[in-house]
Amino acid sequence: MIRGIHHVAVHVHDLDRMMAFYKDAFGFELVGDAFAWEDNEFIDKIVDVPGSAARGAMLRCGTCYMELFQYSLPEPKVTKGLDPNDKGYTHFCVDVTDIEDEYERLKGLGMTFSQPGPIDVGHVKTIYGRDPEGNLIEIQQTQEACDFPLSALR
Image 1: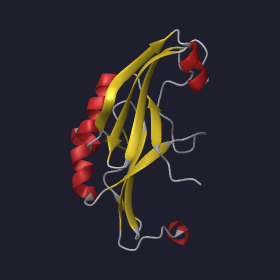
Image 2 (image 1 turned 180 degrees about the vertical axis):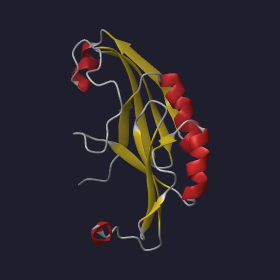
Image 3 (image 1 turned 90 degrees about the vertical axis):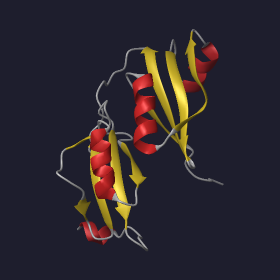
Image 4 (image 1 turned 30 degrees about the vertical axis):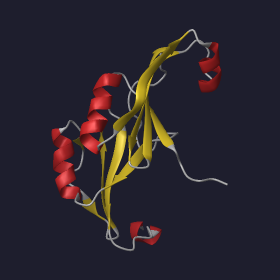
C-alpha cells in the first residue's frame, strides 16, 4: 500500500546557500544533521552511483520533506535547472494562501519569474519560478473545492 510521496531530492551546487534559501523561502527546517560521504561502497550502492562523493541534508516543512545533495563526484551531466518540457522530474509545487504576497516575498529572496505575476486559471492561481540555482518551483493558490479540472486548461 502506498502511503504517499515522502520526499523530493534536488542536486544543488551550493548546499549551504540552498539550505538557507529553502528555510527562508518556504520554512523548511533541517532534520537531524547534514551528512557527507566519500569512498563509501555501501552508499554508492544505495544511490546507484559508483565512486560518488557528496554532502547532503534532509529538510522538512510540515509533512513535506526535501533532500538536498551537493555531489563532488562524479561531475554532473546537467548543470542547469530543467525546463518544464525536459525529460524527468522538472518541478515541485507549493500551495499558498496569498499568491500575490508570496510572489513578491519570494522575488525578494532570490527567486526569478518570467511572468509579471501569477496567472488566474479559475480553479487555481499559479506561476512557475526558479530558485537561486535555476531549479523550477511552481507556486499555486487553489480555490475552494479545487478538483483540478483539466478542461479549464483547454
